[in-house]
Length: 152
Image 1 (cartoon, one colour):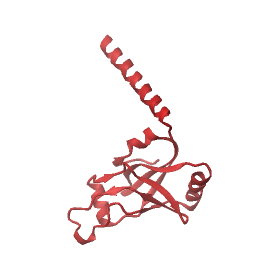
Image 2 (spheres, rainbow, N blue to C red):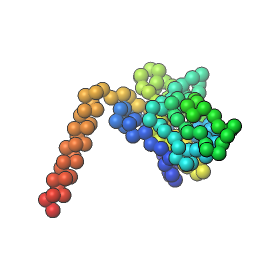
Image 3 (tube, rainbow, N blue to C red):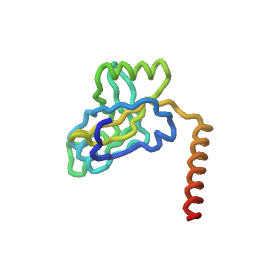
């Protein structure tokens, strides 16, 4: 991924629920009021994912709040937004999704060279026991760090 200037939103739950296999940087087709709203940090990626349709990739479930001064130019906050990728990337992603059973998750939204970009991840879902294992591992690491601090 290229140099990130400012991160507007991250999907922390994605790393908890999925094994991230591969990531891509994609542009997003947005309206003017959506860009202004994102720059104010009024975006939520919690339930967002991407789907391949007719050789194009669309983001579903990304909530961009209406811009306060946008009046008639505001659009539906949950509308599908097109991701801008090269054809070969789209082909590779669609093969992974259809053949291997992976899913597409938006992990972050950031500013790069004056443009809003999305980090798209090809991911495989974790089972419940995998999530428990990850939580237990983090908990044990936290306890070790606390014990090390108390010994000082």
